[in-house]
Image 1 (cartoon, helix red, strand yellow):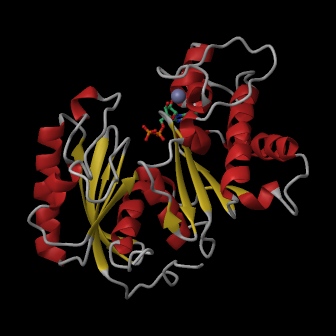
Image 2: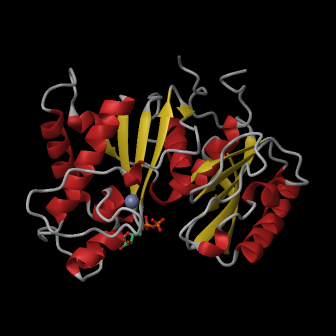
Image 3: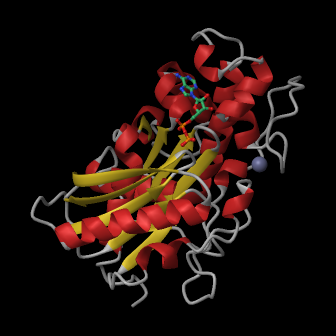
Amino acid sequence: VNRSLPPNDPSGPVVAGVELGGTKCIALVGQGGRILDRREVPTDAPGVTLAALAAALRGLVDAWAPAALGLASFGPVSLRAGSATYGHMLPTPKPAWSGAAILPALSDGLELPVAIHTDVTGAALAENRWGSARGLDDVVYITVGTGVGVGILVGGVPVTGHMHPEAGHLRVRRVGGDAFGGACPFHGDCLEGLAAGPAIALRTARRAEQLGDDDPAWPFVAEALAEGIASLILTVSPRRVLLGGGVMLGQPHLLAPIRERTADKLAGYIASFAAHEVIAPCSLGGDAGPLGALALAETALRPHPAA
Ligand code: ADP
Ligand code: ZN
């Protein structure tokens, strides 16, 4: 079933969004994938940050009269509609933010339809609306940055269940003989523990951005990502797997070995799988987060698929 919205419509509704990121947050309004106005707030203690964002948002709402609000947040966040903790931060490695009531803090009093999801789900929706997954409604968006985050759309609808996908923590088969223990505080050598920026830094004792294209660490990173991508392709059957985040954007040479290793792992099993078609770089770059919040806002305006 295709439940996606019609393609980019510059006369579409003006909507508001907030992207909550690890270092900065952005409140904005936009229309049809175009950002009309934005305010930035540094990520600090949740009380301070959420109050500043709520004030910025109130200013934007008064000026632009948006039709809906979308919240795209770092996770993990509770997405159980109807539960007392809907839109609250779950226990997180950023301890001060555990339990922070994001959705109420940002939407109370605005009287707007509101949607909340992860930043990566927002990015998947934005790529589906305005980027390199346009017209393709089965999308996996993977960010490789400070962590590995995965957002998934099936039939244009974000996958939401007990909470949201956490496929950055998939266990992956290791390169034979690789003794690196990994960097995930929960799992050690899960996908994030092998491929995110801090994992690369732990393995090499250098910052990931300082490594040359031919550094011996990269094949381990590509192998872990190919393992994760092959598992996601087998599970979700996506039309596109989009790769973003600081590591992927900064190391474009990773794309070719990731495609090659993923195809090797699938070993011809998926009929007509073409790695260079399915696996692609994201196209919205640094705007994927804020545009994701706007794309989420648009979902608050369409009928719920179950309705
Ligand atoms: P976040 O995940 O916090 O939203 P980013 O997506 O920018 O932020 O990812 C930050 C991570 O990306 C850091 O671990 C950093 O070391 C890594 N990174 C940034 N630039 C590069 C680069 N040019 N090459 C490799 N890694 C990079
Ligand atoms: Zn993990």
